[in-house]
Amino acid sequence: MAGSNKANITPPRWLLAELSYKCPLQCPYCSNPLDYAKYPDELNTEDWKRVLSQARKMGAVQLGFSGGEPLTRQDLVELVSHARELGYYSNLITSGYGLTEQKIVDLKQAGLDHIQISIQASTQELNDHIAGTQTYQQKQEVARLIKKHGYPMVLCVVIHRANIHQMPQILEMAENLGADYLELANTQYYGWAHINRDVLLPTREQFEEAEKIAQAYKEKVAGKMKIYYVVPDYYESRPKACMNGWGTTFLTIAPDGTALPCHSARELPGLDCPNVKDYSIEQIWNESKTFNFFRGTEWMQEPCRSCDEKLKDFGGCRCQAYLFNGDMYSTDPVCSKSPERHRIDEAITSARATAMAGNEKPLVFRNSKNSRQF
Amino acid sequence: MTINPEQTLQFSPLHRLQWEEAQQKYVILYPEGMVELNQSSAEILKLCDGAHNSAQIVAELEAKFETSGLSNDIHNFLNIALQNGWIKQG
Image 1 (cartoon, rainbow over the protein chains, first blue to last red):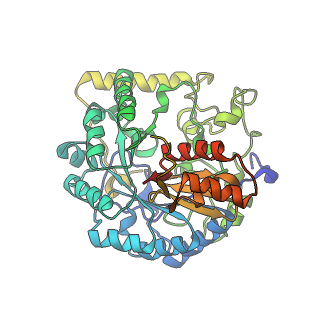
Image 2: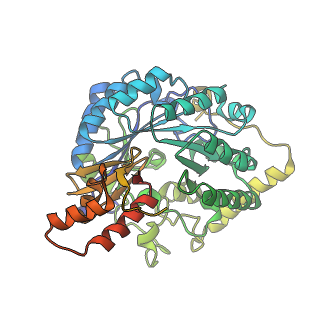
Image 3: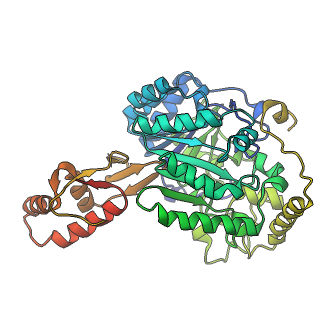
């Protein structure tokens, strides 16, 4: 165990329930693991109910039903109802595909608090290309139904080089659909996004232009629509405070019951992530090797160890450190103090060269056939 | 937008005000977020029930806590709550 300081363990506040890796969409930046096809098992309804009850008892209050596509689960309404009884604030994080008006009504009656729907672009052609499925028309319709039935709606658009030029149209679309919140999530380069990075990563000029447009729009819609802007960390000089610190706030349960401190942690070596079929949430959160691994600051190396910002960003993202440096204890290479920062700059240069060359590589879409290659 | 003392206030239907046993405090819940409240903020928000205006909230809380001079603090907080969309006016 790298770092354990049991006296200072804070309880989980956020539970992300990844109900299924099944998804009708094929987005090439999906946050599911590349080799998700290796994990076809799904917890049953009783397992999920037990997980929700145990995490709630510890203090978790925000609950995300995610996936894959959570609507593929036939027991979703039952799980939402259980969550409401326990006092969770339930968020459905969905592509909208397969979401009928009847289902929207049933989920509302069961106590669902909020629906976050993703749209891939502001035009049908690009949306359907990125999603790998014809979904644009249905998503627009579902967004209207969500508002019709009185839910708060978050519209989530993942931003990358293929759609960043649509920023003005994306903002208008969100306003027209009556979104209460617009999440402009610059792609985070792990898993599927990482293998497609040369094709997806915008140039610095593109990113700065798009950010300017989004910030100006923020003022225009103040009091009406909130805009959350997720920065692309490659263009920052300090790393993100990933997961608000390892094992402090966030708990992810993968479809097969594996408990993870973040949804990418499965890719780190030697963590031996525990499963909710074998242990209670309390045991997992407080006692497991996995959740104690990067708690506190004892595990840090230089330059993090003596850095006066180490309690601000916790050394950044462990998965990114591992992905770039092959060393999950090292400083996130986004940090300008990291001796490996040049690796991020090389990735930016490589993507830029691909953009300028014009003959772009094809995207690797997220589907079971491609997943089986990893 | 600022508070009009004559208009009734109600808690936003897009947010939820809830007691959290584990944290021993009231919180405001909204899509993917949470605000933790101190006791006085929670007392004010509980009275944003569609029946009270801000003047009545001041009167009621001053009576409840047997004190006076709360008006400024309460109005400052209500303005913040209005700007954050936690409450609605009218």
